[in-house]
Image 1 (spheres, rainbow, N blue to C red):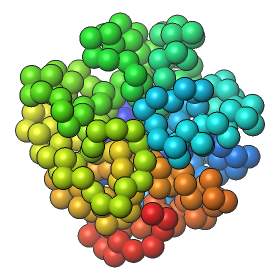
Image 2 (cartoon, one colour; image 1 turned 135 degrees about the vertical axis):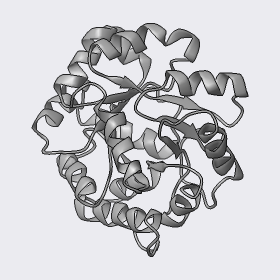
Image 3 (tube, rainbow, N blue to C red; image 1 turned 90 degrees about the horizontal axis):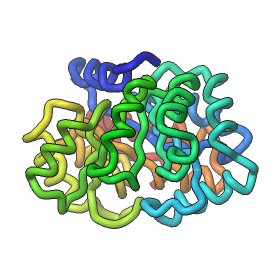
Image 4 (cartoon, one colour; image 1 turned 180 degrees about the vertical axis):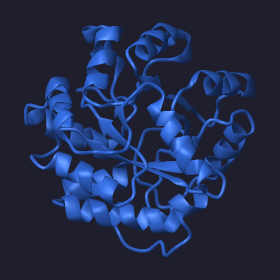
Length: 267
C-alpha cells in the first residue's frame, strides 16, 4: 500500500455511498489466521485491523486479551505477523493495532517501514497520548504509515478537533468508556460520539468498542461513516470458528449497514 492509501480507499468507498466495515483479526491467533483475513475481505470488509499481540494490552477487554495470550503462546511475534502479511493475498488496506512498547523498542521509523513493507497502510497505538505522539506521527508518515487517532466520549470539544485534525486514515471514535468487549446494547454515547466527530472533520469517522451485532452496526452507521468490530468476531474464533464463520459474521455486518437483513453471524 502506498502512503495515503488507507484514507483514500475509505473516502472512495464513502463517496460511492457505502458504509465502512472494518473487522479486527488478532495476528497469529491460529495457523489459518491469514485465511481468516482473506475470508473477511471476501465477505465485504473495506479494511482490516490486524492486532499485533502485546503482553499487557491495557485498552483491551477479556476477549482480545485471551486472543493475544493465545497468539503469544503459539510463539507469535511482530516479525512473524508481518512475514505472514507479506504473503497474504489481501486487496484492501490493513491497519496494525499494537502498543507503544513494541514501537519504542523497534524505533519509530524502523517500525513504520516494517509495517509498510508488509503491506500495512495504517497504525493504531491506543496507549500513546496526543501530547506524546507527534514524533511517531511524523516518522510514521515518513515510513508510509497513516496514524489513526482515537477519541473518547469524554474528550472535550477543543481536543476532539485537534485529534480529528491530526488523525490520518480515519478518526476512531470510541463508543463508550472502558475497554473493548461485547455489549448487549449499543451505548447512547456511540451515536453522540459519531455526531460530534462528524461536526469537526470530513475525514471518515468510524465507531468501535462494543459494536457486537449487525443490528448495532447498522444503528451506529445511521450517524457514523462506519464501524470497527473486534471482540464479537474474535470470540467466534476463540470458540473454534475459522474462515467460514468469520466470513459469515462480516457478511452479516455488510448486509446490515447496507440496509439489508442484519441477522446471522456471531454476536
